[in-house]
Image 1 (cartoon, rainbow, N blue to C red):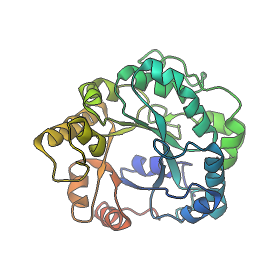
Image 2 (cartoon, rainbow, N blue to C red):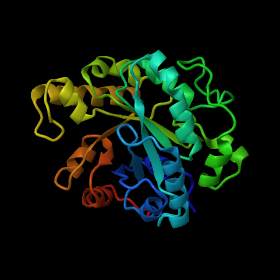
Image 3 (tube, one colour):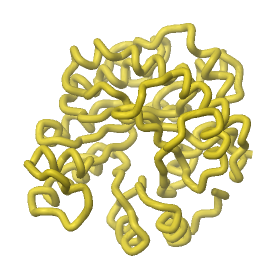
Length: 290
């Protein structure tokens, strides 16, 4: 039996890298089809996609109906991006309703795009937490701002009671028992200048450097894929160093030809195809079923 609801967290606790894929059909049928995915977690892209909570509801229900996964988890972990950017504290407070909405749908994590300031990141974390979850409060965080009312919907997706959901719906690894995974996209030059402070905000688990948007911020129309310019390589190295210093997991693109080297260099969350994931899993001696 799985030790956790969130498969991605369970693997990271075992010291295993994890791999994700994007969702292209956010519907009930799409959820049923994605339930047996090769990936450890699914990325639902709401930054530029339609912010449709009815569709996300249906997708999560489809995952449950199509499950469990071969590893025995009720669903694959689901992490979403948001339409709002992490511009500053005020922008984040004004758009915290988005976080409440997606978490109530039963997702397992949120990735904040354009995480530009530590103030925005702090509000981001606080918006995901219930007020009674106090690990880290007073040490870089204020009391959580998530309210009662949505836990019943999310608990049904997770397959637990609403009371159990309230106990387990906290951020990991700040709360070792938490099941929610939070990440940052350090993906422009403003975010880069603050990345050391932003990655030190308690409650964040991982970060990435977002080469597509980072490249645009340096004046390149399309610099998403390697080879990268020296300024892009320096940006990646700075975000990776910030993650290492703060104890965060680093997310990066992995391909069949470089996944082993990326893992050996410290990448622990891979964006890539099933072939790259299979090579990476073999390299790290993974035993958990896909």
